[in-house]
Image (tube, rainbow, N blue to C red; front, side):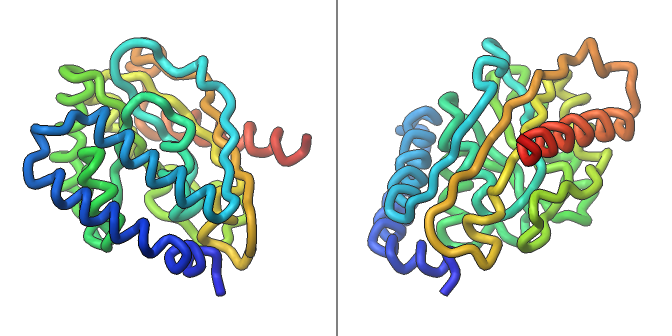
Length: 240
């Protein structure tokens, strides 16, 4: 039995509780601040992690921009990537995901709690609409988002980073927001590999890239720069 199925079975009572709680709260989202809802999302992650022996260690939190919003661009390894980042990111943040997976039970509630967004991976107009919404919310509300530039992930990917899609960096350009490269290590082991039992994963927040540094660059150049920085950090971790 996979870790993913075991986690669901062991935490079924918690999943039911948080699904019901979220649906009640989201009938009147204005009654609960984003900070309150993010706290519940992190509580859910923490309880499920402790029940299974999953742990995430983070480095570089001090590098995160102290003021205003930003976009985190991590490599993508599997279902645990967002929960792993949430567990080590104190300020409320949200994420962007594939519309095809956005309506799965618990995933949908998780997305609603943190005001996440979704669009079809082949829906160019939908992507632009979401990027425009993100830009406005980053500029006006200082929101923080997670956007995966690989677009998807492969099962049991062994920490391999696939090519980054340049179009994903249009979101940062529209918002003129800091780009935070994020290197995820061993995240795939939690839910997307044959591994069984406790897992320790790692999140590295790398030096932010501010708008003045990339405003004259093409999205392909930005994508290559961020991809290489993440690859270098993962290589450094694995060789340590």
